[in-house]
Image (cartoon, rainbow, N blue to C red; front, side):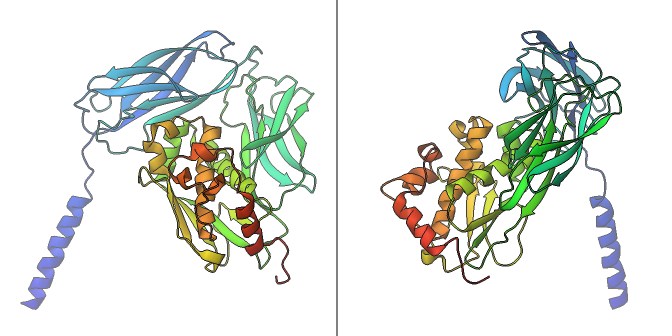
Length: 415
């Protein structure tokens, strides 16, 4: 009897597993393609944008949904589509007045999540557009590999297009999301030609995200504008000494879609531009204090700032108060969900949004190092956890900075 009972339980379990393994039935909306007319627009030209939306799921949508067009976060058109059957597609056309330079076009289908789908992560299509007076020649510039030299960064720039890339060809170096240096290649790169470009830069201590991008300001029309950059992590000596506080900046997976929606940046720009810019601002806030920030998890004992998708409005951040910084492994929180839910913060331009998020993170880290709210203001302003606009241009007050430098001196006898 026991043996029979065991067999029956196993059969039921296997049957249930088979049911669970069945493909769920639901619609799945994607932006299949985006085309421009003219394909390589000039400044002030009227650009027609045609987005092809398709239901690649197994059920019809059974409801009206939205297709939204944005250019650098500015909404340029919204359309409503009726029911789409499985496999069915529809073209949606918007018009945009092209502005000179590089523009990130973002087309989102069902951005307000009215339709329950098989996959909610594939609803957004990004396209980089260079609006320039220069003529299209068939060029396609790519950057491959980075080498950090003592006084420069070297990268290979290649033209993989069918036509020449005509000079001048700018090549820019970004450090933690900030464009710090641009050099000009004065020679023509024919189809298949390549050149090693050396961009001057004096090394900065610590972990850095270096990014080299051909045509950083969008002055050259190309076949593909999304492959111009190469990014990598580097760590430069000296390594932190025994007096240092190591801080890991960790972004929960759920926070990334919220940041993408707020900034309208593609994932590559988000990971290697926007997020490193948050770290760079925190380094400026803590200049002269022996704190080392990492985006990749460091070795040994460290504290962390977790950027969480949680919404705790009106609170934007939370951290324990550790007088004297006796614990070296505290955890503080910045609630990206709260930023997303606050319209005034959600609509901030990406460079400003990075600063505002960094100011809240610097405030919370201040608590973790032992600072209370300061009635005199500065980064430890009591309202910074609710309204970071109050401290966007603020530094630590002299008395707070003096305390931080005392508990975390730059020079240390132990290693």
